[in-house]
Image 1 (cartoon, rainbow, N blue to C red):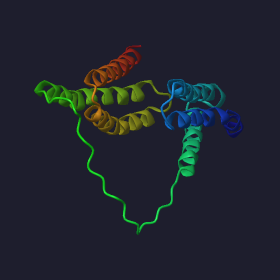
Image 2 (image 1 turned 180 degrees about the vertical axis):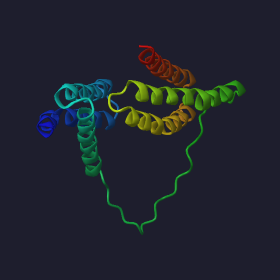
Image 3 (image 1 turned 60 degrees about the vertical axis):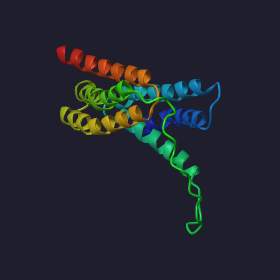
Length: 187
């Protein structure tokens, strides 16, 4: 029965992946709506899978279908190149053209290190406490995603020129995830 419901819900993650691929293709006025629609369809598919297939099997099946659809999109963009052909060397990308100010460097270091770590820990705790499934599985998944999220937060913070945007996102993620974990733990 689970396979039948997964087959019925397959168009939702495939359509979501299609919208996200169209948003990736280039800047356009529709891009924010394509991104919102793509992630919205993914969320609707996951939400619909829980009552139909169960809280553990449903999201896992939908995420597997979505990742398979995305893998198919990646496979269609594969480009064959001649390995012996020499590629023209490019210069390294230029660093930001902004003026160097000491406090910006210190702030960027704080955002990339401790604040990105707190946001990653918050996400791990939220998964370990709030996600459906067995306690052991939630703890393992929550613990395994923390280093990857921390590394992603560091890389993004150090490469983004807008410090306030990085601060707002990291502080918001940390507040929401730690708040959700605290509220779930308190109840």
